[in-house]
Image (cartoon, rainbow, N blue to C red; front, side, top):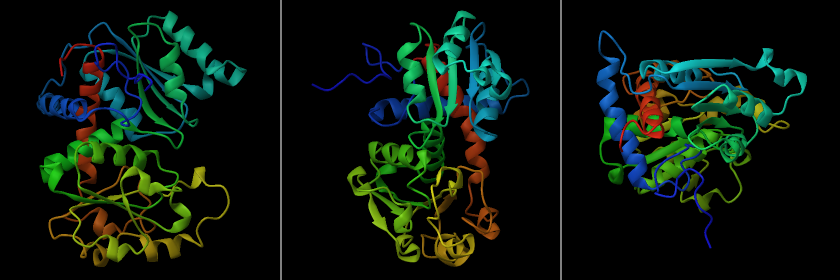
Length: 320
């Protein structure tokens, strides 16, 4: 017997967003469609709608973040929510308080939604199992496990520039082993019907049996980029590596850094993506990052609309 998906309620509606794995294509598409409607809000002179007025959103970031934390805060405020940013370095966590005790105390302050980033895989799932009814949890990245809103904003970016997922060839390049983004991307891409997803990386940065996720594996970057429509670069997750998995940053760039010469192997209208932060000269050449095929900054812009969509759907203010 298959265990119920903890992200869905008894009616199959989204109550938490913890991972793209196991979510049906209909829910992913609904989030993307809803995000499209919020792009017009971000273009207004007054960038606010009252959908979350009176709701309290707590950002619990136990790891450093710039884009994710800021765009979540902007998204919540544009939905008119009250936003509380927990500074972990000055919280009771430093005094030995457990994660669940922290969440219980914040729940007692009438929290409606938690946005959680944590270094431990499964942290958001743990919180979701223990919060009361009516409180929603969004995973903003947990260890090496998942980063669902990054995957969704990337899906929105791909759909915006390339259209039908079912006609695309997508390459994900870099540190697949340590990347929660890569895992969420693969689940989202395959669920949305992308017929060919390639992962390109040195053997030391590939998970064991990654082919089981429905991808093809390439270690030669030039060959792997041949005729792809989308190139998704990944940051080297040095903080999650144990031991030396690479000879040097220079050697890595020579073999797996995206340069104009390597990008020329992809389709002429291929787009280049990166979840950030970028290490220029390690994963990507500045000529590519700032070039005409780069959609890295639009990814950030779309991220606000996607996170607005997720929050409004979870709060029941928008019917997907």
